[in-house]
Length: 125
Image 1 (cartoon, rainbow, N blue to C red):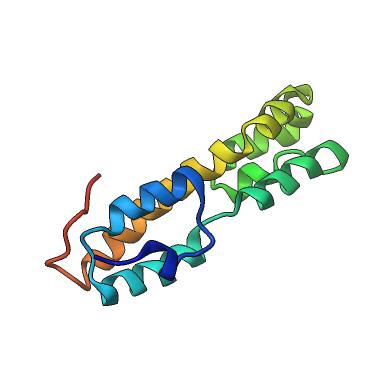
Image 2: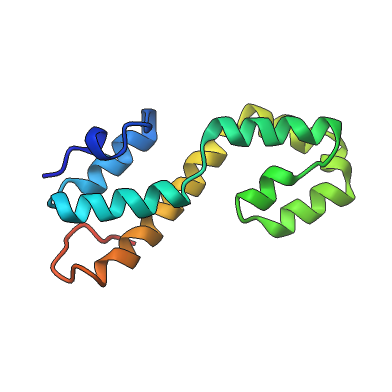
């Protein structure tokens, strides 16, 4: 069983618990590979907050592009963040936006590294 905090010390809260559940059946080599790939793909909640704040002063929807939500990003640009209401809602929910994106990246990372370790458990979809 791999120690999550040794591989990904920057995790906290719900994300930490979720990743700990994914990594509980991994050995150290698997956990190390997962941590390298996941760290490169995850988004920090503070970065999402900063990008959302930029929406008030310039480029509304930038955070949606970073989160891979291109359609919503274009909509935010065309409607000035849905008349700032969408931007305000995203300011309140920035942590859940980052968490949802990171959960998606964790599943994609698990699928990606399971090809390197075919006997790895915990690949749920």
